[in-house]
Amino acid sequence: MALRIAVIIALVSAAGVTAAPVTLQVNTAQSSVNVQMCASFGGIGDCDSDSSPVTGDATISLDCLDGPATFALHDFDFLLTENIDLYLEFRILFVVLGTFSATGTDMELMYATPGTPMPQTPLSGSPPAFGYPAVPVDAAGMLDYNATGVVCVAMGQMVPPMPCNDVMDLSTLSLDPAEMNGTVAVSGRDITLTIDIDTTALLNPDDPSMGEITITGTIVAEGTVPPPDIATFVGILLGDITGDANTWDADMNGDCTVNGLDIQWYLDDLLG
Ligand SMILES: [Ca+2]
Image 1 (cartoon, rainbow, N blue to C red):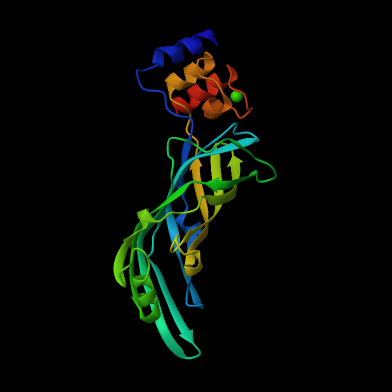
Image 2: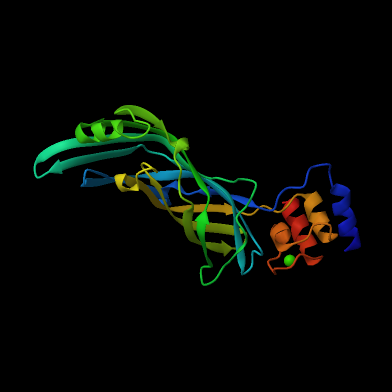
């Protein structure tokens, strides 16, 4: 055993210590986001919605690969692969008083505070489930819109007035913190993360009655947790790196503990 440790220490390079979080890739075929816009002008309202598959990634950590008890969300970037087309029509009986049509392109939802992970949250049930009531989220992309009739008039009366035709930068949108619930299924070192997302933004923060955009969806992200680099692995064995969230990926034999028993497994993995 001492020889094995010596071998590993000898292999330690000047490479930096990698972070314990693992990045999972979004499974586009299983992931979609729905964007619904509901608006009201002069008491006349309408809603429309459209959905798109999603690509991107999510970065997470667990306390342990074998029967994890806690989960932390570190980062995510969800990109809609298709445009979002919305068409709202405001009418009394059969008389159309105004319309609002919009196309969202390159739409994106991302974690608003990368570098500051969400707190560790308990996992329970099977598959292990978590719930974050309020995750800071930002949007990006462009919304090309065209308003006619009463909608155009109402937008002109906003303070400041909004043009009836414009391209809106969605990064200026103020999204409420998102409710994110989901599950983390672990098999060996393979993780499948499923997140349900739900957030809203007011169309006009100064006039909530004008309506809102609601973004909901389910994201499935998958990946295999790589072993830590050698410097990190040795640092964990020597007790220089501590804490479940920093050491969970060094448990090579799946017993929820990082100790000398993991060395042979690590070497086997390292040497292929
Ligand atoms: Ca172990």
